[in-house]
Image 1 (cartoon, rainbow, N blue to C red):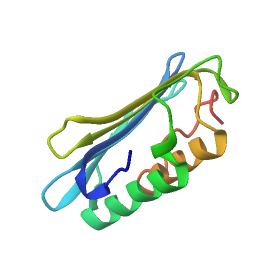
Image 2: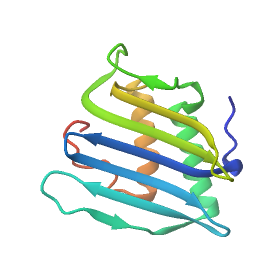
Image 3: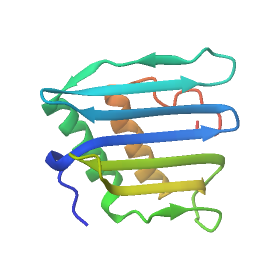
Image 4: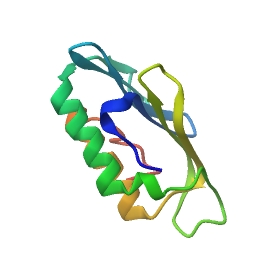
Length: 140
């Protein structure tokens, strides 16, 4: 499957482990992307911010995530049978079209795609939200 960044309306990544959870979601608007961010890690209070990102910058970040993480080659589910493991980690990657219909929904329970690819996904998301997934001991 080939992902066309111009046809993506939602790009969201969610992680949780134990009581720790964090997510970042890009929502396409007419002239920008809203970036929703939530983190509740350890004893820290939840943090919610919504900095807008230009259409061009959002598309660049998402295209980078798709290319560098090799998202088009991922399988739908990852678990204990996968070689790369992050014990306790539960995650999803949700990509929707402009009408909010699912394009892909990938998930994992302990297992992840190849670690370098997964790290590239997080690095791309951190370009818009540097705090994303920081402090999650299960993933550091």
